[in-house]
Length: 187
Image (cartoon, rainbow, N blue to C red; front, top):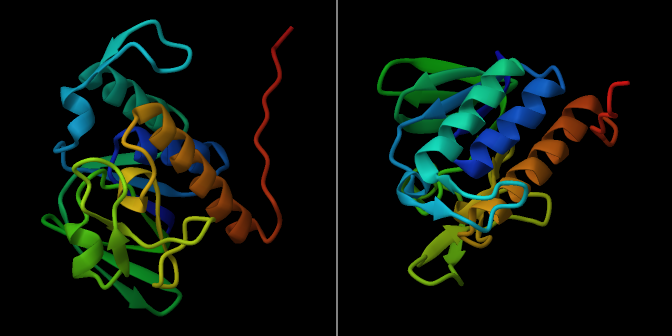
């Protein structure tokens, strides 16, 4: 059983997987390559002069894998509760995890399909989002949401930060204490 399955490998999902994998949590990152970030161009992403969306997404996925996440290109069709966690069904198999993080960008279909409560979106062209608490929890125990699907701005740098925030909250819950990840420069 994975500690966490992250559904979506755009800025929110990859950022979350980077944090959970670096924290030593068994992380599965599921990607269907349908995210809107792949069509974007960025000149307003902190720390990067300019980058195309495909390169940004690929860099995030590579970083998550380098830190220990497992990456699979599969489409999730369902999430349901099981003893001790959640079952995630894809077009290629079934996986189990203690927590599931929805980072599906503008797409709320999966969240609605599995029974996540939704509310009207506030961003232009984002009609519906998952209803989450400030930590990123949905109404379904063990199911979290981050990024645009959770109602934050569609701007990639903001969704990446939200993915990291929710990941820290999940890690903290798994550890039973607040988790902090700070590296220092090597001499």
